[in-house]
Amino acid sequence: MIYPHDFFPKGDLSPLEDLFELNEPVWEAVANLKERLKALIQPNLEGLALGVPLSETYILFEGELFPAGDDVEIVFGDAPKERLLVKLSGRMLPGASVLCAGAIFMDDQIEIGRGVLIEPGALLKGPLFVGNYTEIRQGAYLRGNCYVGPRCVVGHTTEMKSSIMLEGAKAGHFAYLGDSILGREVNLGAGTKLANLKLTRNHIHIRVGDKVYNTGLRKLGAILGDGVQTGCNAVTNPGTLLGPESLILPCRNVGPGYFPAKTILR
Image 1: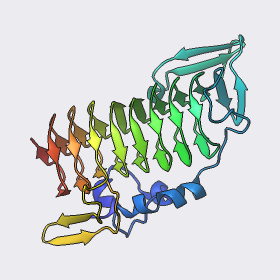
Image 2: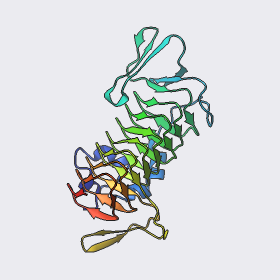
Image 3: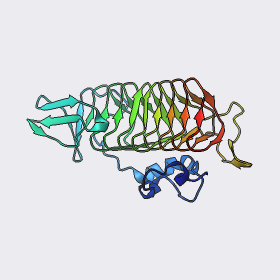
Image 4: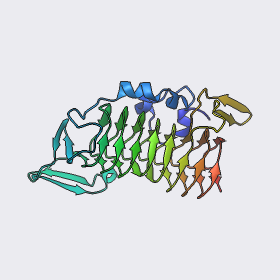
């Protein structure tokens, strides 16, 4: 009940071995995320102005980064559904990513995948991995040590630090993700907060049945299994683990502790 396959059963875990030790408690992925990201990412924004809003929109295509001039046409469709389209002199550039003017990249320890949209006003710090066909919306704040998988959404005024989002996870509106993991197809309702630091600031312990685990971490938010959904303004306390397909209804304050698959927290 504490291992990665208990929380993320929807697909093959072998591609996630860069992030998870499959025979260790799932929260170890949070503890080791910074070092694993440094080994994983291959920065690909060389030459981009750092620490200031981009003065113009850039296109990233097949490893080449270039300004979007008058010969570039962009259709700002839904990136996770591959509806973000870029043409250069009438020629389609399949899988091109768009870094909008006004976005801010604070350092170069960032890897951007194919078909990614970074909207104006987003601020990104490394180390950071952004997977294919993901959308980072206006005003999002990625504070570093983050892995955002393919087809994810990091939404307007969502703040994320030291966290993992697996394929299809969405935090679309006004969310906070601190030292947390979102499984495949997790959806956070507007205003969801995944708190990561106890008021007493001591190590976070997690009770699973009759056993209590000392995570050794002072900061640990929530670990949400595949398909978990939270209602608007839901809050999880530090050290909250929800099994796959669980639901948190709106305005509910839950945890800490472990909740099995398909739990409904009213």
